[in-house]
Image 1 (cartoon, rainbow, N blue to C red):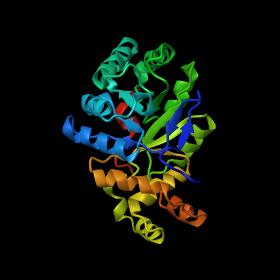
Image 2 (image 1 turned 45 degrees about the vertical axis):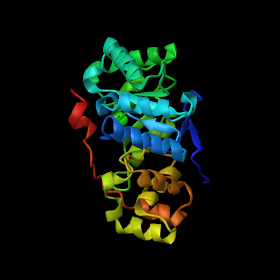
Image 3 (image 1 turned 90 degrees about the horizontal axis):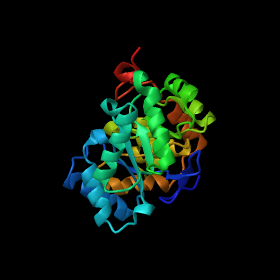
Image 4 (image 1 turned 90 degrees about the vertical axis):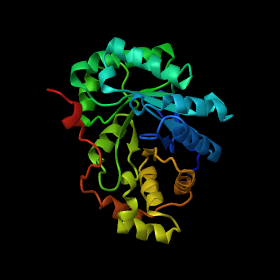
Length: 278
């Protein structure tokens, strides 16, 4: 699988999404997130992921404006937070994000966590946003299989993306298979295990065989499983290094070895414990 920063994956409605992007979770508003986004765009990234929760949409918007890169060439994602969900609330949250980012549309808008009580009106608002042209694609975050099944029962437009925690210690193969069987592109957050990839000897050893780092191996493993990755960093050298995950290919045996590392270990919250009320 030959990949470059220009490599994209087609969503269900034909919109094309870059396979590698920049995550901005916990990237501070202002100079920190702005410098990270500017560095990423300079290196050739064309996908930036944020959320209203992150509180950094203003800084990202300013970076997009000063970067010299055309808005149409950058795939921008944001998300509606839990206390913003509901029909009118979601539409209002979208408008706030658009204003903060200084753009008339988003390339992808996601429901940040599954909230059962507001799922139907929230998704109706997402579908309306898609129809209005304010967003080019819609999807979800942190939806497990039963959350997706509940959504698919009421949706007129199925989610096009599910962004969830996915890395060598939490591979969620059943969820990935379910998504892929239903035309839902899988996007991984915490693909570098929140900084723990270098602590995994198998990843370090495989990396040495490719003159690559353990984080680059973790990213490459996901990419070869057709998972979109959005590693977060505010360090220009790390942002640049992550691109190198595109420059080598893992063997079938190496992929199988990493597949064997799964132990169901989360570094983030369990979606059911956090937000799926009964």
